Length: 316
Length: 173
Image 1 (cartoon, rainbow over the protein chains, first blue to last red):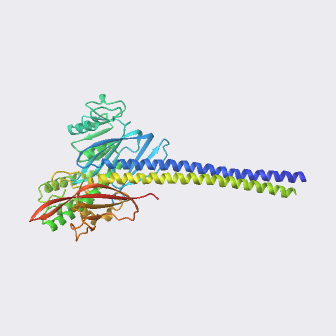
Image 2: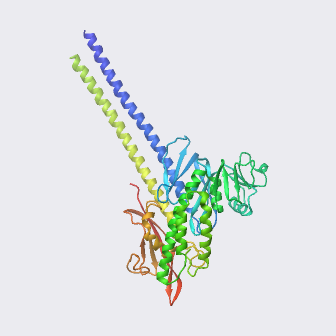
């Protein structure tokens, strides 16, 4: 009887210790895992914010095009997403290191327009920007590419060739990812071929006469070179969403210029004569929901630009 | 007697476990506090960098830039007439440039008092507050030319003065 009681006491002590030990250990393991995840997420978020901050110098004044390189400490995936639900819409950047999890922290920007594959993967990335004008400057379009993705431009028009040559610089670097060739055979192995006005053997086709880019069987319409690059480097969904965001900003800027026109007329008596056209531009920008109808707004934009150039009091 | 001895052992063990638990909790809390402080510092540093770069590039933003209005294209030139119109529509831009306050101040010709610009006193004022969020923190600034159209002796002329763009940002909490 006594023995049995002793055995009972001993086993209860052990059971208590084991349960408490398991509880403490699992709590510690849970805490450590949570801590590692938070650390990783904070690092991802920090890098995403860093990339966004680094995009600030890409805001151009009157220079046309410039390129910069960012290098990450390890293999990285950069996810860029566009949303047009809020007034100016949002650009989301998310970064993931090593383990390609679906999680990660999104960093939001309202004043950036990034065009890239989704995701872009590598250790080094090129960023270059180009102003988008309609007819006044609306924003800077930022193109993000991995140095691993080689883009080979075949039969590009002279203006595009000159621009790409300017981006490449005088000395060819090992990480160069933009190439100009007259035939596909000259393109680097595994490169993404961008063909101008031809139909075979290319992943991306640009039709300059009809002003559209065909990628993955989908058409993206453009009017100027900044949108052409945007269509080449991004996908249809993001491109259309960014067009919508740009139109929202165009509408708002047209409103500001229209107010400015009235304000200057009242203050100085100097008449730009652009008020009505700017209201029309704002209305047209509101009506553009995708790239198919972008041609209409460009013809109005050209007219407004001419009016502004010959105006007694130009607005931009 | 046996019962009391067993209870003592269990009590000892519970205290020991509690002590171990408290020790590790304390160590964990210290690590979390240090990490949080590091995170806060890096968030503030990122805000500072963002504010600095924003201050240098904001004048190129379409809502601020002079474009070709005042003769040849100019860098770091702010179109004050346009900014005054932006001020009237600023509610739409509340989060457009991130969580920062944007202010523009004329620094030359110098005024003894700071007069905030509104539609009635413009251009006889020297300070424009575009975004007025309740931020307590630091600021970054950049010198710019502040240009506007004015009527002088019956003619419309361009007038440019010296000013600065101030970006106020909040320390991460």
